[in-house]
Image 1 (cartoon, rainbow, N blue to C red):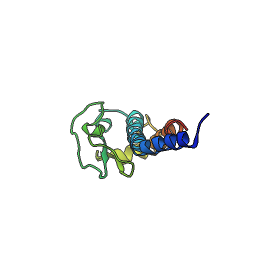
Image 2: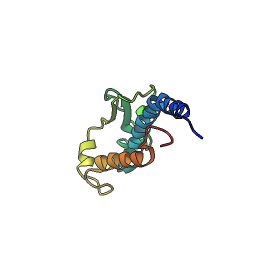
Image 3: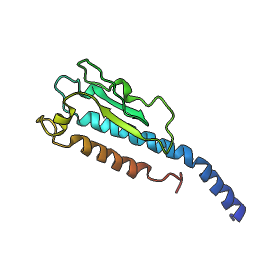
Amino acid sequence: MATLRDLERDIRSLVKDIPQNASNIVAKAGLAGLQAVVSANPVDTGRSRGNWFLNVNAPTEAFVDSRRDSLGPGAIIAQTVKPDDELHLTNNTSYINKLNAGSSAQAPAGFIEDAVVAAARAVATNEGLILRGL
């Protein structure tokens, strides 16, 4: 039979894990958003798709001037993400706003917003509880 001491021990264990679990959720949300927007990005030369960057606490001004259909070098979060960090998903190609406005038949207008919302829903569905085991 569980005692109050057992309950206290279990609660302390859960509380100890909250910061790391929250950091994991923030990182997963950012990476899910990056993956979703890269996948939704229409492709002609691959330049806009290759210029998505995910950065912590500040947007980047980086631009990769090459034609490639891949993730930009900013795709990997190099720092440890903390729960209160801001993630910035950035694309500095000169025509990304036109693409997002619907200039390509390959993607609807608002594909960026749609991708980020879909990623947020996926993370909320799968990772919504910071306290593991609840």
